[in-house]
Image 1 (cartoon, each protein chain N blue to C red):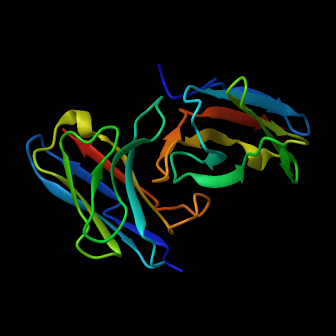
Image 2 (image 1 turned 90 degrees about the horizontal axis):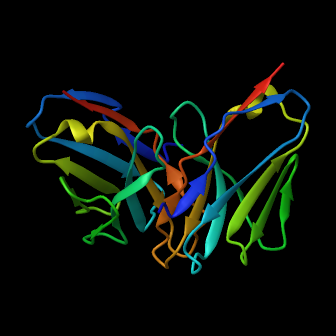
Image 3 (image 1 turned 180 degrees about the horizontal axis):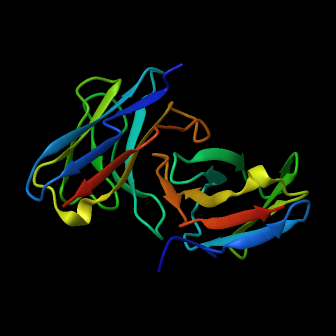
Length: 113
Length: 110
């Protein structure tokens, strides 16, 4: 019962390094989302996808890129990491037609030094 | 102004007592409303949906007031396991993007 799997779970980056966060779901969900959570703030939407091959910007997209080449995977890339990107990143997916059926991954804790 | 605002708390509640808290949302076009629970920065988990008519799930009661644009959550007979951060969440469009409040921390004490 994998659901939504995020890798890695933890990572420390140096400023200017790049990395990719992977979100994988095995529920055949159409919609996938990347959120970040910072202390004292709610989760904020970075990018989302409404189906394979589609992506769209959310509330805080700057400094991130995404790709959804396969339906089950949603990748979040940081091209040149900055300390302001230190955060906990959550991926979520849901099936089409159901705003109630969100499934979240367990999160990736990223620290940029 | 934040889309969804919550009192951060903490609400310190004796075991067995009742606690209630609200959140307000700014977008009158908001479509769906939820309470999520989050433990120690783990992933959020859906606690319950919120309907205008009010709804209960065991010890939890949620209410939506569209006219005043607020959502409430009441927890009766609080358990130690209810200690968590409760996130108020709304959706405002057909893409199902979730707008989160920053959360209300509840601490249930023996």
